[in-house]
Length: 108
Image (tube, rainbow, N blue to C red; front, side, top):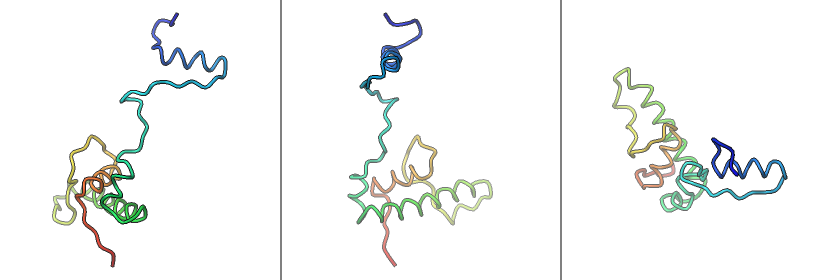
């Protein structure tokens, strides 16, 4: 019997803690902890893992500067985010831009 106020997943975890057995809990959309976007989507638009890190880090700094300059009225220097996202993390926004092919880059 499940205690009042507990879901079956939390009740299963509570029992597992008592007997110290590993438990596989089904994941839902709200409990997903996978990195998004996936690395294979990023690699379709960049040369290597290293390039994806460099491009995303530089773009995240630009997005950060864009949001910090909004109040000052200087919009020419840094472009706004080019994707619609629910994330407020600048690096996640930059990675989504890379995964969607919105950024072009070249080495100097």
